[in-house]
Length: 98
Image 1 (cartoon, rainbow, N blue to C red):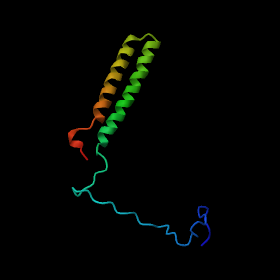
Image 2: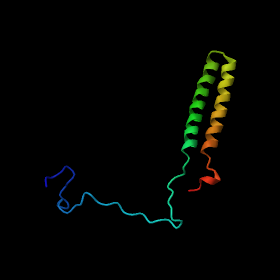
Image 3: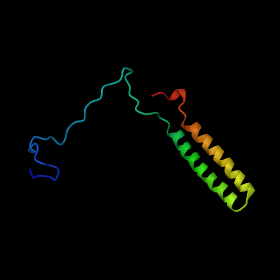
Image 4: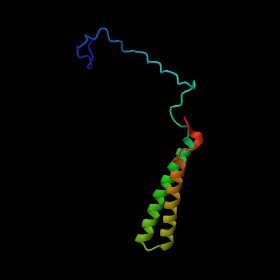
């Protein structure tokens, strides 16, 4: 077998099994394993809320710079709605227990 760049000769390289099988994880007492909460829809909605907040920041700054009062107020309203919905979407609910 030819030497590879990562064979440093510490073990000779002959008895290293490169295709090792993954270890089996123990099953939890309930019999099923949940790694993370299934809330993809809420995560996507929270992402939309972040972009709404960024757009609100843009609108509020534009309203301040160009003296457009209505645009500034709508931007501030978008910031408040986006930030509040972001917090609501990422708050864990009682049904989200893993």
